[in-house]
Amino acid sequence: MPTIARLPDLLISQIAAGEVVERPASVLKELLENSLDAESKALQIHLEEGGVKLIRITDDGCGIAREQLELALTRHATSKIKDLDDLEKVATLGFRGEALASVASVARLSLTSRERGAAHAWKLKGEPGATPEPAALMAGTVVEMRDLYYNTPARRKFLKSESTEFAHCADAVRRLALTRPDVAFSLSHNGRLLYQWAPADAPRRIADVLGDDFIGAARRVDTASGPLELFGFVIDPTLAGESKDGQTVFVNGRFVRDKVIAHALREAYRDVLHGSRQPAVCLFLAIDPALVDVNVHPAKTEVRFRDSRAVHQFVYHAVNRVLAENRGTPENFTHLPATASGTAPDPASVPPAAATVNPLAGEKSPWQTPRQGGLGIAEPAAAAYLAFARATQALDAPLTASRMPTPSGSENPPPQPVDRDSPPLGYALAQLHGIYILAQNADGLIVVDMHAAHERILYEKLKTAFDSREVATQALLIPAVFNADPLDVAAVEEHAAALAGLGCEITPLGPTQLAVRSVPALLQSGDPAALARALIGELREHGISQLVTARRNELLATMACHGAVRARRQLTLPEMNALLRQMEETERAGQCNHGRPTWSALSLAQLDKLFLRGQ
Image 1 (tube, rainbow, N blue to C red):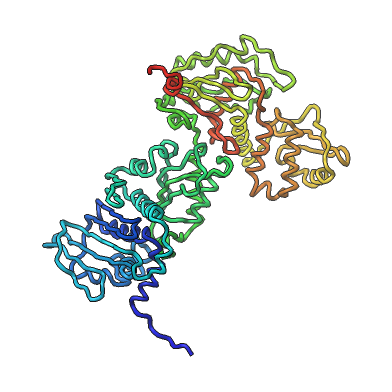
Image 2: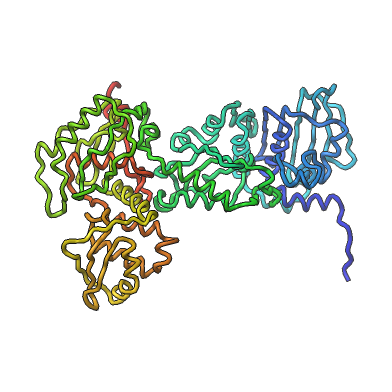
């Protein structure tokens, strides 16, 4: 019968090291966290052979007293918590007291430290029976780890190449540098200095670490609610990439991989990302330490929130609000997807859109909702805009694909002059191949995908109408009749009331025919039969309960797509300008329902560069 025996202390530490010390980057992370907890303001990191041969960290922290050096290398010894109450509200990066002991069990470790006010430093080697010896050090602590896994060769075989291990180490340094912009960091590898970051404010450190390109393509998040605060940057949906590794999230300064926050981010980006693109973010969540449990994972990369739903909703709404901001509005115009520099127009200079004409329908334009409370109007812009409106009043009549007016001087007045008082998206110049609208603003050229832009406008209006249960309908003078599968007819008969709630009245004319008698007023210029087919297809595949709950936005997006102005449709200048004004007032107008960009910009500087002007 097997006997129970107590394991030797060294083996216990080596088992613990298997959980804490996965690779050199794991060691580096633990040691850097200790230095930051020691109130260091400058960290120097030296690595050799990807951190396998050497990791040396020099800090200027508070140091360790001579009589505590030996205790620091023992298991479960820490200065950061003393009782259960401390454990339930951990405010430091480290707290378990296992890192130094675990590293010392699988590598050659030495610790040199000088406590503030001490006569000199002391050095202790992580060897059995070693005692502190006097050493030379100005202040702080130097931790040196050599020959990782020298005494456990089986573990060493699992390490990757030098370049791979160094990449993981550099990643660990970058993450910690992001959390502490007030601390200077330098990183060298094999004697070569690779990174050096001076103390800075948070946005500057993020730009230093993640690159100016990230900051230039991102939107700032800065909000608080009760015990929760969220700061950082999220990528503009149009500029999102394919990598899944771009989400850097911190909770109380600790890098985490949290499913709750990850899901909140996916939901916030749900209808603004194209295809398989992934959002890159750098976010810092601050929360009362008593409301989060950090003692979940040996590597401390997971946390557990006391109220995960509250955290999810806070993160979701904070990011969703930022993504909903209209990048065509004056305060956001400097963040154009493809523009260079340019001064944002004064918000008081944007003319009201109430006088714009209806581009597609007769009574009320689906592109136009008059502003309530309006913005101030600069005198020159107001005069120009009123003249533009008066010249185009005659166009406020229904337009259909079969009845297109012949352009005249009154319908296509000369393009409006642009200056700093012009709207952010400027004034239309022309249409390109019936697909794109070309407009000029104070900074250069704006190119708009008219179908994508109108699709987003309709989508947002449909969401608002659906939420308020005010989906206005438009009866068709002549019902749209189309052939249908018997199962489609059965689905319509079964769910006629639900379809009516979506603004569509569809009735059977026979066993294989359906007639569309009314559609949502916002979509009256679309193809009724195509819209009906799309709705019925969604209905049969997902059922009505799914369509009005889980897949509600996907359904409304499908409806908006069928109602949006189609490519090759010829628009007059007033119609184009109506679209531009409505884009400026619509949330998420920078992307269509499928996440594609709706507009882009070329500054005059970029155009000059294309044509070598001034060179």
